[in-house]
Length: 307
Image (tube, rainbow, N blue to C red; front, side):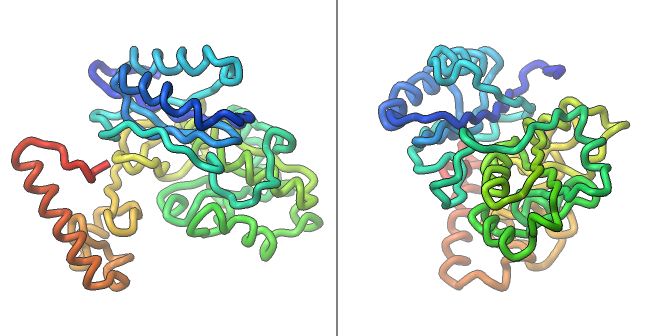
């Protein structure tokens, strides 16, 4: 990846590995991130690590070296993209019971997971007529981009995925499933779940959409639209540069230009999709927050609630 001068590197990483001491790892990890002036969020859980961080090149390299010095993270993989400005404004290390929340403790990607498909081989796999291409992201993510002819469950959260599978998929009818998500982590659990339910052949795009966009030239790409990311960039394009979407503060959905032209769009308060669902109390609270954001910007400051 060509790195323009003065850009910020955004690194997404995860690894499923047993961490019975995950609580003890929090403080030293947070301290090292702060020493390196990194921003973002890392999650630690009994099942591993997950997160996205941003910083300059030397800082990203520093934290990756730190993590990989721990034997359990020696082979930790990560994906990178670019941002003109810092997409996070604080550094947090959080403790969770899962690094990606499916809500089913018995699903263990360390023991059972789908077969990885390299980005260079993905087009051929999803072109087969016997393959169901499954987008395991949520509705607000799939709405701005995806692979052509993929099936989107239209879930509100990943925890709804098992229910979708039980109601809509059948191991006998859907004997070959190829799934994808943003960075690969949800596919680890989704593929493990499908295999545990009797689905025979389950494939997953290695490294997710971000890896595909990096490895596959646009002229040969089957990707359409942009890819939603969980930071202030909102989305990235095929070159992994910041996309054209904004984000609604109230419902966190990505917004197109026509959404922001609507009379129901109020910066920091609402968009056409959530305007009619907000309570008067929420409108008042969001309006006050937006006023504080604008005051901070007028003083050249960063409002603490913007990331």
